Image 1: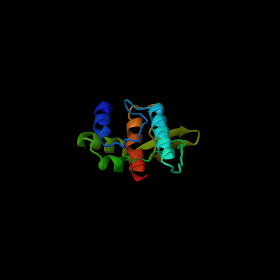
Image 2 (image 1 turned 90 degrees about the vertical axis):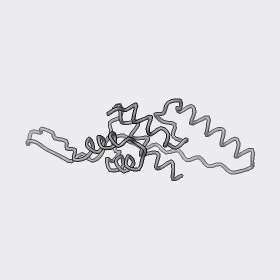
Image 3 (image 1 turned 180 degrees about the vertical axis):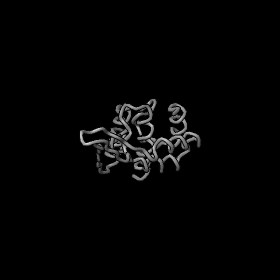
Image 4 (image 1 turned 135 degrees about the horizontal axis):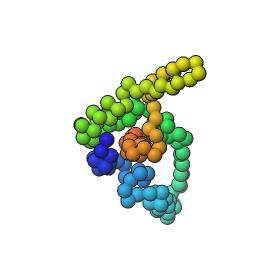
Length: 132
């Protein structure tokens, strides 16, 4: 999968508040943006509420159907979309155990450390950011 091409295609549609795994953005830029918004709100006499959320096992629990739904709704080039569908549909994991072979459908997981993981996570997380 051409990750650079996918990331470039998706970057334009990502919410500006998405700072993870993006060129020119980081934890530092997210914190600076947050502090700026807090200072402005306090200066204007408004109340401030900050909600922080850490999604445990985010990459391990990323559902393939959520990835594919987000890809279908994105500006991702059709060839990359089709390739992603091909890679994520009808996946199976087979383990050899003392009792014999065990096979299970794999409907989730995007390994952290994989090349495509961050781009796919951003795509799905973008939907959440657009709703808040």
